[in-house]
Length: 348
Ligand SMILES: Cc1cc2nc3c(=O)[nH]c(=O)nc-3n(C[C@H](O)[C@H](O)[C@H](O)COP(=O)(O)O)c2cc1C
Image 1 (tube, rainbow, N blue to C red):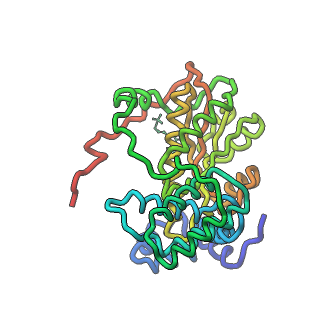
Image 2 (image 1 turned 120 degrees about the horizontal axis):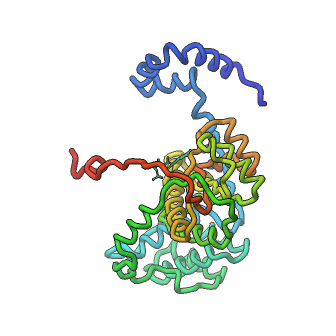
């Protein structure tokens, strides 16, 4: 157990003393201004301490990664995406991306020394198409020469292409039926889930949209029974059914994808979009799931972090229990809010 600092000791005494009697009044006072809420978190709560550490570690890791020769880096992913967006603008500008093309080519050339990956082939083809179309410009001419000196293989297929037809193969009724058949299942048959089924679900999750196509997440799939028990017991919401879960996926957000605090919430958004695709794909493949909340509590993160060897900037977003449903178990009704309550058009 790490020793508590003096401030932490004062804080825990105060929060213990205030917890029952004064908390509602204290919260009302703290909510009056941003300054008072900062004071509240300085004196009475350390709830954000670990997140702050994670965000700072993530940004430090981001800058370490982009200046290394690692063949995958988030600066390259984001900037290649920005170039693609420039290419599909209507009308396309003759010259664009001047503010970030140098860092992109630098990152690309460094990454090329780390070996060929699909990410690099994509980057190569987009950069190639960008330079092919760019009008002459002193900065671009120089960078184009540098880019070509690396001479990567350039598959044409990775550049912006014609829009796919809008007619989806799946009807709304079919989609709704898949969504209706998905329920939070907590009782499973004691059967393993084949890994190729899990991989197919991850392949579906990879198609989810993500901010600047960074995909700042990872699915840690646990199917070893001993490890599943350990991991399944680590959040709070599995009490009573953790022992019968055959597979558990831990969705991890990568804060090392971001250079600024302003983007810290994207790990939750991007991971959740991918998680839903993962869940629906499993459902379509006959595997049931139950989302499990990950409580943001320092001791629990330390425990799970030690089991999964997570870096401080890698944040558990949620867990997903998976397996073949045991039809003799029950599922909750879970009433849904009506459409009228969930949406508002043009509300001023
Ligand atoms: C982010 C998230 C966290 C959840 N956490 C838990 C949990 O910790 N334990 C649990 O039994 N169910 C958990 N659930 C399942 C919800 O209770 C369930 O999705 C909701 O009641 C709707 O029911 P349905 O999924 O069967 O349609 C969670 C769901 C989500 C989306």
